[in-house]
Image (cartoon, rainbow, N blue to C red; front, side):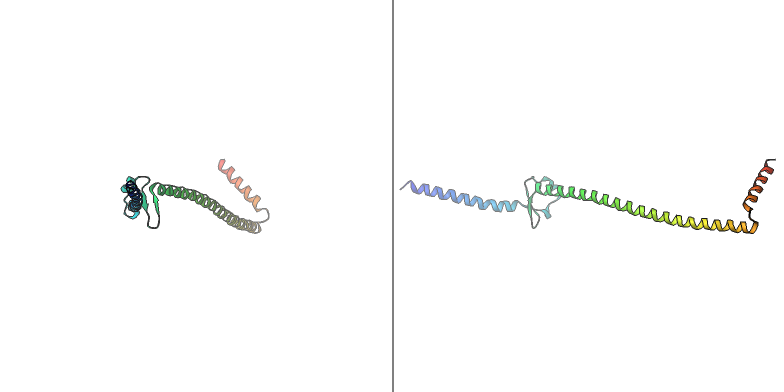
Length: 149
């Protein structure tokens, strides 16, 4: 019976030590989590990749945090490229609509000018006779010959 007591005490101490070690690890892990609000850039960079960071409502390791930020950055770049492509497509559509509208307005203005020119030519022809254009050309040719002579 003498040898049973030391074995029982040893087993009890071993179990107690395991429970105590587990209890001590939890507060140590809780204390090992660094608050993100208190970290400077240099302190963050000095942290080990497996260091726990407390973000108020969430805890994660430094490597998990960096991986999450990397993925978020890549997603933002992807969204930016998609937005850029969409904006370029919208711009090209608006630019084409603007050019088409301006072209239509120019064609309308040209029709008005051509109608006014035709009206003025008709008014000149009515005022100076039926063959006014032919006489005007003949006069210009005569002036040109006189200048050469």
